[in-house]
Length: 270
Image (cartoon, rainbow, N blue to C red; front, side, top):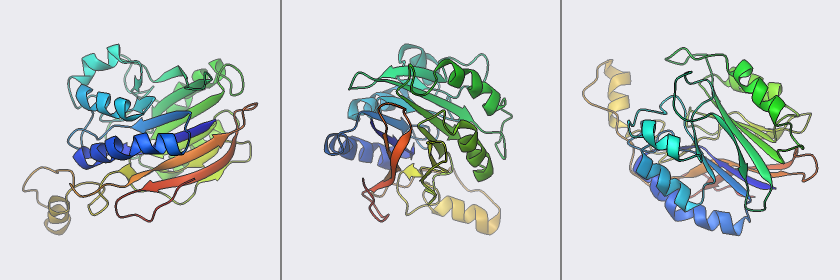
């Protein structure tokens, strides 16, 4: 299978890039399944129902969220009627929606997508992501009912993301980190066949401070004082993420390539 994962969509610039470029990438790269993290697509904080529809209509098969999953209040109702949007497994026991689902790809094969939140350096205490994910991986073993398994590890600490990669090695086709908005350079296939990247980066304007207009973050760093809200940077966005090609028999990764399309970053493509 040919899989694409795109990192956190950031504000209007990120949405515009998804709408403009994802249909082309889907066709040109003959993608079987696309996952997009939409956690910051609405004003840089959360995802609205309308913006979730935009990402899905542009070609995403699944949209994952994160610690800002319900910052946009309409998502509380929207997620219950849209199975293609996932919130983290360990967000909260009473949260609407689900954190893992088995999807049918365009080629008819089944793809499991799951998302978990890390615990290290996060502003809120979340349940253990490893124990939350374990029963899901046991229920849908790679190469069995699930032809591919994709895990979105949404957290701050690179060490926690790496630990999740090792925890899932041989049981997932791809483990990819999100949340920090900066693409890392460690795309690899782990010893038991799981593709791994510490952070996919963002789909947003990189002439910014992690996707936000530079003025307010710089003011806070330099003075320690706030004079307004953060607002997403509005320049041309780069789509950042990872392309993975899997073995049809085992579901293990056999090729992994970082993706950067448009905007300021050096292009990279399969």
